[in-house]
Length: 321
Ligand code: WQD
Image 1 (cartoon, protein in one colour):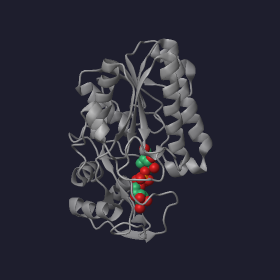
Image 2 (tube, rainbow, N blue to C red):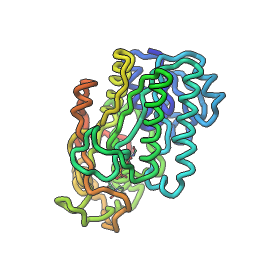
Image 3 (cartoon, rainbow, N blue to C red):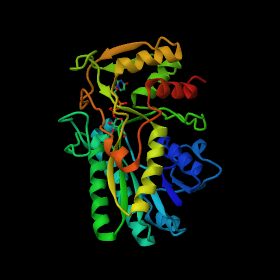
Image 4 (spheres, rainbow, N blue to C red):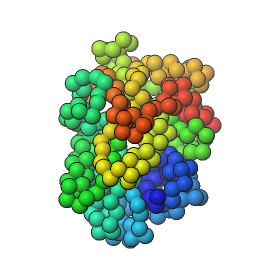
């Protein structure tokens, strides 16, 4: 298929683009490089240096004709979204509505949308399945849920088919080492641990050790970005082949605590990785793990690269130099 990967130069976007190219799809990357990296671009994919806030640019790009869009461009820092909701309204909501409207104007009907487990908020039960209530606790998660609702309406009114992929905690790097771009000023745990291991930062601050978990630190479901990329390709086949939409969780179904991740990183890297226990970060649930049975049932998808050793080993290959 001919695919426009919007945000395809980003951390997840570049892994998705790589997977689609490996499967023989024809991919064009549309990215403003605000957080995406030029080094993440592949020579086999065309590149449009564009911004989702520019409707005319989007229409001009889409007029090339595409079988599907991958919607990856968004701001994703939950903490920042609570301080600067305006930025998240503009980019995550207005930006994505621009994409939807430009797609309607140019007749593109298939969308794979990068959503997040943040749409669920505080878990009422675990593991979280797709029937779990969606009560986002941060503005970032709210924007992701809102776009899912837009997609549902555009599905009813404009006949689009979409897959909304609710990522749990994305981590790791391409097992073949083909993607090397490092996120600038990461907010997520594993890249922060990698920076401490590489001496880029002094220590890892552990946000609270008094949670109701075995070692007192928060538990998360870390999912390898290559597993996510495979799910995007499978979702594309599903919506274009079956002409149906779906909303699905993408997680490894295993939980790892902050200290377990740090301990694994010490073993894999051989580095001390100093730690400082600090206050809790507001809004962090004690435990979040995915139920991914629906992804297996609909997409035939199951995580295969998401062991802590692989997540950290592939990350260290990038950070150790
Ligand atoms: C993981 C755990 C922290 C950094 C967020 C978004 C979510 C998704 C993934 C995009 C938590 C702890 C972290 C540090 C720490 N984003 N931590 N010290 O918060 O689970 O999810 O990123 O899709 O939508 O909400 O991920 O990596 O920030 O934190 O102790 O320096 O590590 O408290 O328990 P999170 P995270």
